[in-house]
Image (spheres, rainbow, N blue to C red):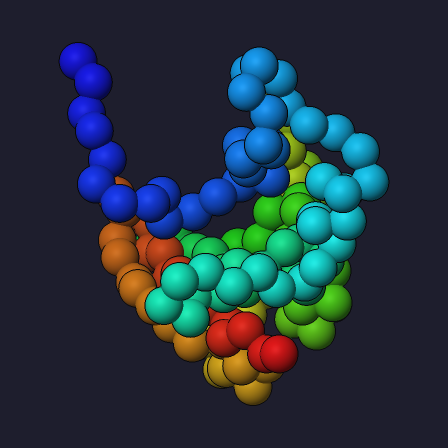
Length: 142
């Protein structure tokens, strides 16, 4: 079943951006790469897109309910190293996992206070089973 979209797409990703080609193949070359090097892209309505060179604006932190006094998970292996260093986080890989996580011994309240000083604001907080999760966002600075 096909659903038609009314109006233009809200987001445009580099690998799916229109290339002006009609043969179904993607365009490659310096023009496509140069467009990815700009830190901000403007969208209708003043919405800004940020590429990874400009940093990561979202952050998830979590802790187990029974461990509200710490430790706190503050990032994954792709998290901003400067933020992780500021928090004093250590990167660990649990036996059997094929990914790494950053942890701090501080309770979530202390971590949230530190992140607020960096400009992060809590967008949402929820409980998932026995886990508490906070989603934070840092505003774009031009």
